[in-house]
Amino acid sequence: MDGASVGRGASATALLARHRPMLLDAIRAALAGPSALAGLVRRHVGVEGEDGRPADAAGKLLRPSLVVITATELGARVATAVSAAVALELVHNFSLVHDDIQDRDRVRRGRPTLWTLCGEAEAINAGDLLHAMAFREAARCGPEVVAVLSEATIEMVEGQSLDLSYEVCFVDQAPYRTMIDRKTGALLGCAFELGGVVAGAPMPVRAELQLLGRALGRAFQVRDDALGIWGDAATLGKPKGSDVRRRKKGFPAVWARERAGGDDRARLDAIYASDPVSGADAAWVVRLLEELGAREAADAAVAEHTAEALGAVADLPFSPRGRADLRDLVSSLAGRTR
Image: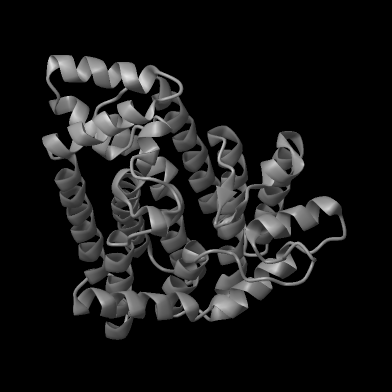
């Protein structure tokens, strides 16, 4: 990693840390409640430990941080943006509870997933509670915030449904992009747009914020897909080719299948249709992807979408420092290794 990348990473980390203590306190307040289910929710979100004491295991808090950063750069007070930011983070976490059940994931952020602790039925209840709590927070900001968050939530859920449907068939790159624009891009776009809404930004600025979120979502998801195959096992906690073993049809697999010869394509289809996928078959898929150039294609796609996002940043009415900070954050997210 070169010096510029290290500098961007440090700048991005500092930017996300700027409002973290305030956001954690606000999330804890939004999730307050004496019920055992509320306790499970706080544990899933990462603001409470097993002992019931406050914890800080809530991940990067990327989406709520983007709401606050955008709103304050557009002239709003921090306090004006907090409820909208928290509402978005709770929607994100509600989706993770249900995604973990659907994907059978047993670990998230280094901790057991909720369904492995309390069973699927109670985990669904916890996800539903998070959804309700999210919109209770959004309602504090008024109907426009509720409307924007509702539309983004609908898109995100539809994207997850598309992702599940693609597990039983291959699609080409156009449907894949539609899926990630909804599953990943919807909430990232919502983060920027909510910042604009609470700041009273005009519609052209809000449209540019949406464009930024969609482009960043594409870069983020393609990078995530590549890491699911070639990411460092020690850093990610899962072996090379893990997404092949899980039959996830991310960008590398979709791109490579369009370019594979007849016999290779037939074997690729057969492997992704099998359950489980053997270690030998997963290794063959990884070799095929590398021979066809899927890794380089993923890097090129990330670079293309990152450039689109940076172009949108340049058009925003932010302060010079704000634009520089946001450029560093976008570049850091697109180039992340975990």
